[in-house]
Image 1 (spheres, rainbow, N blue to C red):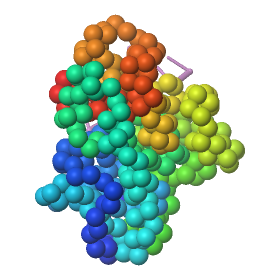
Image 2: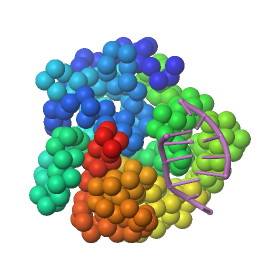
Image 3: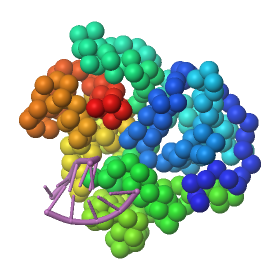
Image 4: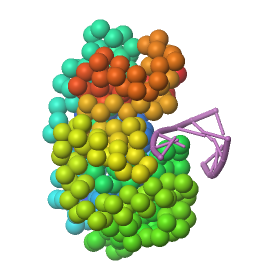
Length: 298
DNA sequence: CAGGTC
DNA sequence: GCTGG
């Protein structure tokens, strides 16, 4: 299908510069652990992923180093896009070390068990779409929705012979009917996405401005969109705008703070406040380690 | 059994 | 409470 790396000629494999050696589990948790919804494990053990007009395959070497390839001819822009997407300019070892693991034994265990885990920097608009689809859905279901949206309403990725389609842009979504969206397995989310599309498509600079605004203002703006609550807004800002202070409280964080921090019975707003106070300005990064650990163990 | 917003 | 892997 459109999710397969079958057709085009591919570039040579190249090392993913500035990225640490990781285990297969950490790589899987990074690209397919709830941050992004267009990475697919291939039968040969590689990962096939798409964002914007980028198409790439990742391969993990025996030494833990990640290599990538892309459709022949797109090497230059793919290399630049990978650097942004995987945050290779950010010093994640230093950021992770700045978390309060020295005084938090559980956090220390989470960091130890997922060395190299990091926060992706995805396209803001696509991240909003993904998390508008995410309400009461599991990762596999969200991924199906994204592939249906891309296949039915997304434009072909230029230069790949029509083999791949990008996600529809917000103006393209605005041109869909709610029924067409609903047909992509969106359910009640179709109305939210359609209404958000009408709003965003009528305001060409709104998303770009929201992406760069200070966290409180950006979050307020996102919360005004239909279907965007606290959790979705924080996911969009964390995974689509690099706002590491965003602390999304989903059911896993609810569980893990309840179990590991003796906060059972606390409500999500209280837990968000705890998270900011306890984990500090990089609370979102801490959240990703807690989330991964609780899904793996717990 | 999993899992946000209004 | 409800839908779907």
